[in-house]
Length: 324
Ligand code: ADE
Ligand code: ZN
Image (cartoon, rainbow, N blue to C red; front, side):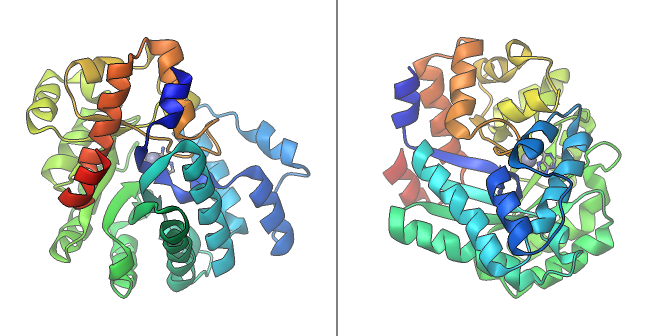
């Protein structure tokens, strides 16, 4: 079964590129750019990855991203993930990046987007991997800042397929970003948002009804509302679920408590993704393997989950047909 999982071509729809920063590259960039990090060794970095909640992770994740300064750093970060795609047989990926994490430190928008895009161009050329970039607004910041970021992005619109919403969920509901999502929609961006990772179902309803999103990132709290479950099933709204992430951030106590199999059996449009794989003990294959080893997921379930990912991706219908 593990071999079966590894050899299947896959798509990934929920991956923060900053969350694929491996301790080895963090260490190397901290030296290359002379940026201090609060760790003496690569092992120290790994030991710090012991989270109790989303916020406890975000604090460490934003601190780690400070080593990214130059276009080459964003290229190297993205290229390392591309090599993981090859290892995991990911043939299509839609990656998130958080511009504000970098622009707030004085890094130019152009530096970030060009570094990421060049690595993705090379991924297409060298390995045939197709991709898209989704820019996420940090929800702990205000809407004004998100609007400023959207304006900065317009110059690079050809590289950015969609916008999303991430960072500290509790206390920062989707409705806080109504105007910026409306503007993004008018400009033709695809729309997604993290919702129902830790927060209750009202956040998912708001993301759907106020932001008009096309995919829900996480959404594992949906099971708390029958009304929402029925709607998600009827409209087949994709959920980009990240099992390892949910376990590492204590959304579920352990793997056997994870509800992905239940969501799938209810016929929701569920997909499997790695979120921040460097921080959450593994890339996409490892997420599938953990599901198989802990949740009695069958071969049929795995095929369904992978088909859901291709079907829920933002690629053209003709490309979808090639992949499925
Ligand atoms: N940024 C990176 N990973 C995230 C997650 N799982 N939830 C919210 N924001 C994030
Ligand atoms: Zn995420």
